View 1: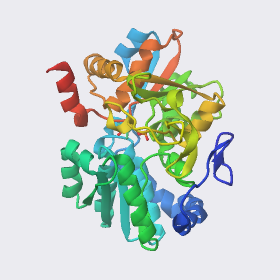
View 2: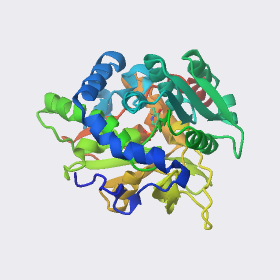
View 3: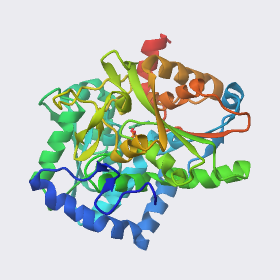
View 4: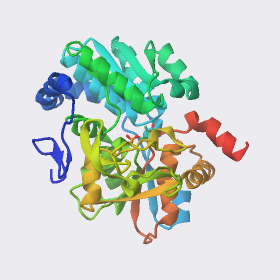
Length: 393
Ligand SMILES: *Cc1c(COP(=O)(O)O)cnc(C)c1O
């Protein structure tokens, strides 16, 4: 695959595994085994069967008629919002729990910001009867009470991270520390296409089911497998990478990745990584991240917790640098308006993360027969309080 990872774990200048020496055995075990495990027939059969009967795949490719009318092109929504637990995150969580079991692991750890990845992880641990510990910043625990309750109801232990800014970055540090201390029995489920190699490649493969299905479904709808545009929002970049994956080598397909501009890219309250960031190392890989001149990570800001991340996965950094995909950004306000529009034109309340991708449609100029696929990464139930606060319903 032209844009895939090489044997050293790099995408062009980005990727690799920049980890403390004490983590080396854990990451090395994963690196040596992940491809053999996920290519094994029994693994594939179980993964496919759970995606079908537990997650509810294939997710539909829906021709959004009123959106199509408004934007003057054929707009299709890839409905990851209809998955069990409400977003694409479950695809990766299922893949990783099956992998962990085959590695002989007895205990799962994860980090979570808003709690979406924590809920997906707690769900698959309940499904498989495996101990689950989720690290979460103390501040996020206060802000995201419903997801904390969900994780506890599913049987997970939620451990507060009390250092630093008490948010996602600190939860990640705590999870890393746990993994170092429990190298034999514990697997760390990372929730996006970030982290040391092999995580970015492994998570992209688990999410690639999105574009695998979409290609077939577009053929059924239009007689053509290749759309003109494929669009998705980017936090760490896993739904976007899943949506891009099987179109990467089809150079005629334009890939559009939408980041969160927050209050605006030059307000100091933003998460528009490619616009504001520089090359450096974040969470174990070389990528593009928001940092000060002396290399301190800048606190990101976005109204949507899933996009509130100071970096992007290394494969995205590569696609950005070589111009294979276009990276743009959308403000909080633009995203909220797009969320409202999608609700009222299509009867679908999207996650605010997803609404960023929808908002980008307003800025594009399509030809009449263009086919456009947007990844509808998640549903908006979790964001209702934010929508209510903004629109005053
Ligand atoms: C977590 C999340 C995202 C952002 O994560 P990616 O890894 O960039 O996909 C986007 N949409 C939804 C609904 C999410 O829950």
